[in-house]
Length: 192
Image (cartoon, rainbow, N blue to C red; front, side, top):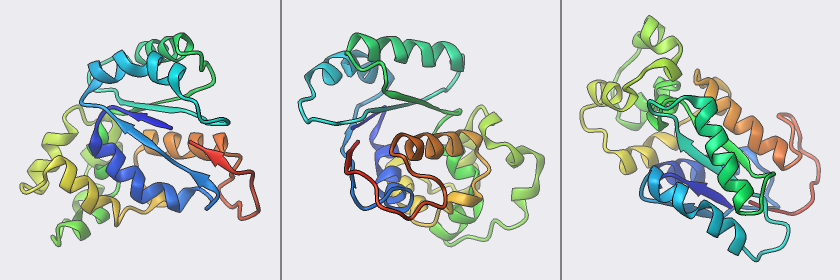
């Protein structure tokens, strides 16, 4: 079960997870309407989930928060919900950072030539862009969060993203399911 801050990351994961997980992993999503709502429902959703052998992933944007404090806060909520093993992942700084980490996908999604800008200093480490959403809108003025998430995710190359938090997220989910980057063997059925 993926407990998510908002629908836009759900749209991305619906496209990307089939590329990183094996077919026998079943994913469910519970997207909230923002950070406050997500944090409020974590303990009750974790406690109330009745499907056996379900693993949990909690994902939230870092925004202006201290990453370690935010992660500890979410960990405390997971413990309150009886699931201390839940995978906590912080998207640095926000989902659009993942998109800026794959500018080729952005260009393809919006049929626009943005070649050359990926080598500018600003885009070398997209997790450090404090206002990634505004920066993405500057590059692609027609970008809208949910529609943009659907469009860009279709073209994202998992191995070529410059966002460190993107790779930490992908690696964490794979590890939780017992999948290595080159793994193609059989795995136990899993519920996330």
